[in-house]
Length: 634
Ligand code: WTA
Image (cartoon, rainbow, N blue to C red; front, top):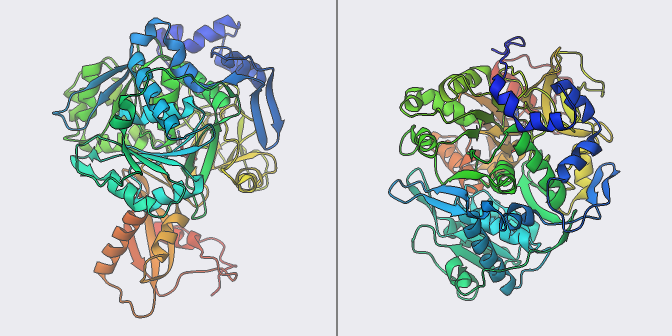
């Protein structure tokens, strides 16, 4: 259970040496409250942070806010890759390890990539892309597993001003296809295969399936990860190692405008069509850099491990871009956390002396279920700080993480943010007293609140809608090719105010307690999934007439989809059909979308206007009161 008064104070030594403490000393700020108050002047705070990065040309205006459209650091010339890679080439960071890459099969060697080696590969790959005709503004879809080449591909695109769109390698060919079509990508970068729980995932096969229907794709570049046999279409498909072999290891970084687009990343919303979140070079760089520096307190000597997948925003912001901007050494692990057994992560932490670990509540609950004996077998004393992201962390999991992984020494940074926000926004700092289950307070320069239905701030401990009141540098700029939907989804419920879609409360001390989504979006194992996406996959099956999908709580994964299905005439309800429908969804979207349960119904509850009332199904499934049913059809 959550308890507003269970408080964990940060260790004095950590506070004394924290990056945020140094920042506060520099500006004559004595307490966390003083810092947060001073940073309410968010243009001041974000200008200070921008000064720590290198600009080809300094910006002359910090912010232009035409609500809801923001531009940051106007007039600046910038490239995130200059800050992540180029600027280290003349310092001792050049020969520091950037990535410790650990393949899943234990008989394969751990690779250590220095900044200099990364730079060489990025340049070669960028030159190869240019030779294929890739230019500034072109979209490139990346469908790669967790190998260093995923970072290299992203950085090579950004270097030449092309826009990357990374698609999680666990997504199906159908999901990949939709994302390629929306982005009108010119090139697809993939691998022959990848390892997951000891099994080979045939990525190239999925890619082939997708590009059958994507006329924009001119080339498919294939990284040879697994030495497995694949079909190569003459003229279209190219091997990564062949096209880079003869390329120069020098490639100039494009001097871009601050607001030039860096990437688009598709995320689930309340309709069946994923939204292309748009991020730009400069503001995103400043926001991710500042949050990693102050929240996870990265120093020269740290070994950082963000155990997410690059296919999600966490991987973009905290595996690829910000650690490199900070000159950090990070672990990049290819596979599953419990392969070949539940000790895999702990063994790696002990071997590499990882100092800061950032993961999700789902992973923590999974390890909790395996038991603390696995962590107990390894020396985790190098850890000094822990992090959590992706969903609310239940206090029981928090305490377990704190005790068995952090050895009761390491504060847990429960960081709240979204694909849309680009970087962490509501979070503890290493100097913040913690309450298990609370993401504590807005990061300096951010302003958040929780509103009632009619747009008033809630009273302490009441539930409401979490909102963001002021712009921040890493915010999404729009939805790709759809500014109207951008306005509608985020800025119309409370005009001019950013709606997060999360339900939340704030306690007497001003601490935020996130409760989960307030809309038709699920959080399956920390991954966002729209119920509408699962429904549209189901109704695409020949047997299904209608489908309604709800999220039901799951011990490990947070939410899991449960589907209610009515069948077309001529189809019989059966256990086999249930299994077939589950497999179908898995194939259509990806294994994360697989319904945990399917229930056949003769009819679904609907409003008079014909909308399915998922709320009723949910109340029934959870044994809760069904609430207002005045709009129910019958
Ligand atoms: C949820 C992941 C509670 C939330 C970075 C949000 C959280 C959605 C937390 C975004 C947290 C993320 N506590 N809930 N610390 N962090 N969420 O876009 O519902 O994949 O809206 O970004 O995850 O998921 P997304």
